[in-house]
Length: 128
Image (cartoon, rainbow, N blue to C red):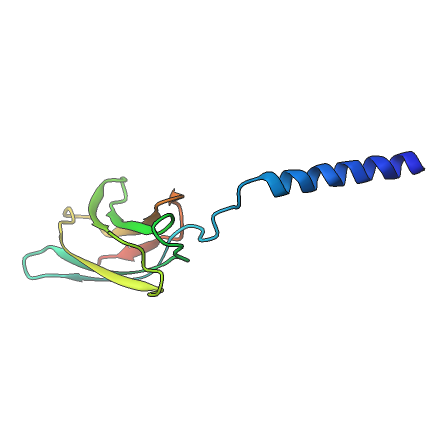
């Protein structure tokens, strides 16, 4: 019995040592789109007001872009976010003049962050 106990302690100590030596995980996680308002302009193009939530950590980890994507994966428009929004969460930014191909009934709006890339929560927008 003492042998098993010492083996267990050695395993636990090894796991603890690995945990302490590993780099800390990025705390901010992925950027999430939390709301989208889409309006068609008189010239047929679209304006998107997109609200993004992300636990910004400063220049090393921030939401750096959101985009409007057609069902076939074509990127129809992108809004580059040029700086962190540490003290403004969630935040809303707009993009006008987005051309949506005829017959496109919906688009996906997704955000990207500087560490994880795409992959947070996206929003499907019905354009009908």
